[in-house]
Image (cartoon, rainbow, N blue to C red; front, side, top):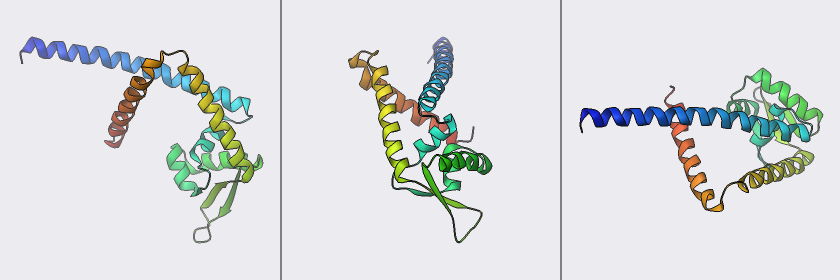
Length: 159
């Protein structure tokens, strides 16, 4: 491979990387806006919405695990859980073996609410897909899946 070819490939990668950086920045901002609107519609903070998205219906999970999933400090998570307990969506109990930790699970009301949120979230994405040609749906999902895998690999490297 010649020097000129390598330079052209590097330039193409730099151009593509710049486009990807710009698109992911804009996509992240738009996703935050989408979540904020949905959270507001259901009288949640964006953090409460995200926390509920991380809790699965039949899960009884340790607060440390949720904090890791959400990449939050324990004290920040406690404030979020407090709000969700007040609203009746989650229940918590102190772990008997380690009183500094708690187990969190969805209440019956919370499971119903999360099902409703999940449906609303899916409906938003179905509406978004309507503005994209149907022949592009599968390639879009494939490309986003590849991007996610690559991003997760990059994160795992500790870069």
